[in-house]
Every structure is written in C-alpha cells, then in structure tokens.
Image (cartoon, rainbow, N blue to C red):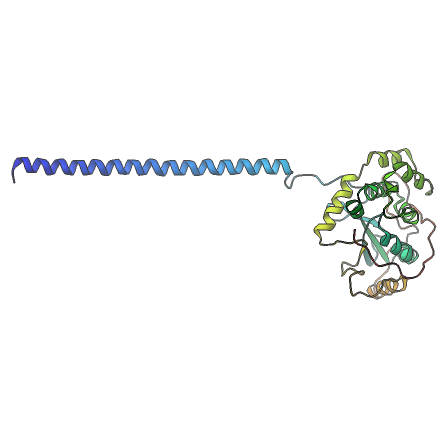
Length: 295
C-alpha cells in the first residue's frame, strides 16, 4: 500500500474518531440538558403546588371557631344531653326548614324526656340549605344565634324557641338579628351582652358554613336528617313514619341491657360563660309530622 493511501486511511480513522467524540460530547450535553430541565420542571411543579397549598390552606388551616362544648370531627356537633347516655341521636337541621319544625314539634317532648332520663344524647348539626335554595341568610343567622346560645349554656331552650317561632319558609325573618335577639328574651338569662355581640357579629358564621359543607360531603341532601347511633337516616324513603312513639321504641330497644347515663334536667353541657340551660316550654306532641323537605 502506498504511503499516500496509508495516510488517507489514517486521516479517515482520525476523522471518524473525532466525529464519534463529537457525537459523545453532544449526547452528554443533551443528557445534561434533559436532567437539568427535569430538575427545573420538578422545582416549578413544586413551586406551583406550594402556591396552591398556600392559597388553599392545605391541611394546616385551623377549623372554624366552634361554640363551647362542640364535639366531633372539626367540632361541628353541638351535644345536648348526658355525655354518657347509651344512645346518640344525630340531627342535621335548618332553622328555616318547615319539615324540621314539624319533626321538632312532634318529637320535642319525647326527646327531652329521653335526654333527662339519661337515655339519649342528641348531637345537632346546624346547616343552611334553605338559604341556598331560596336566598337570604336566615338559616345562617339563626344557626349562629343558636351557637351563641350554646356559649351561654342555653342552646336547648333557644333552639326550641326558634322552632316554635319559625316564619314561613319564604319569609327570611331570621335574617333580622334584632328579631333573633327579641326571641332570645323568651329564654331567661340568655340575652347577655356577650350573646348580643355574638349574634350581631356573626361569630360562628364560618362554623355554620363548615357544617353545611360537611353535610353535603357526607352525601346528605335534605333536612331534617336523623340518625340513631350512626345508623340509617330514620327519615329515609322506605322507613316507617317517625312518630314520638316510634322514636321512644327505637331508643328503648337500642338501650336494652345498658346502663342509663347521668340524668340531667335540661340536658345542656356546661358552658364557657353561663350555667346549664333549662328546657323551655314544650309544644304538645301532635300528629305525624309532614314529610321531610329537601333544603
């Protein structure tokens, strides 16, 4: 082979090696760029997530300020009755809801009697479905006022007064806070400066809204919704009519062989700023209540 040919092949090998070296360098730069881009992408996504969590509060947002004695998840329930009662009635209700008033007026004497005998504790969840359906703020304002009464240790009595004086469903009378204060005067010792301020300031509005949101998240869509010991809604379609006698029978069966709780007249837990409330005058139990209405 001539010297000229050997030199040509050597140059060709050199050029191929240089080309391969160049290709390797380009691939390395490409991989570096991809890795760097991925890191930047992760950082950007992390930053976006951080902003979203920051704006939404993530899991670190404190629950809404709750009334004295509130219990349960996020303190959304207002317990009424002996804490050691063998059965618990969970009630979701709206103070503007006519069906809620119908059941309250039908069952009131029976519920109070079971509470005062230490047989039953009631956990109230106050929602505002009617506000959403018809507009206005009466459900919200009445629920806030009832929560304010809880602070004074007089929830049960004021709760009953509100239902005994419920306006027509399309009349947003409970949105008038002065009217709510007038009704509070029917409960001895309730209308304190602290209660008045609580009602006017809407101290527990966020708590009521949180209750309303939790109600929907639980899959409920009508008020009242009434559960005994976490069971099926006693007012669900297909259930027997919930009369006072039936409620007493259900509680008696559930409590069979169980020791009653501490009997407490008025059945209201201790408050932060008042003494335990006493029962207001109860309307006589009438006939079967109207069917529940969706809020």
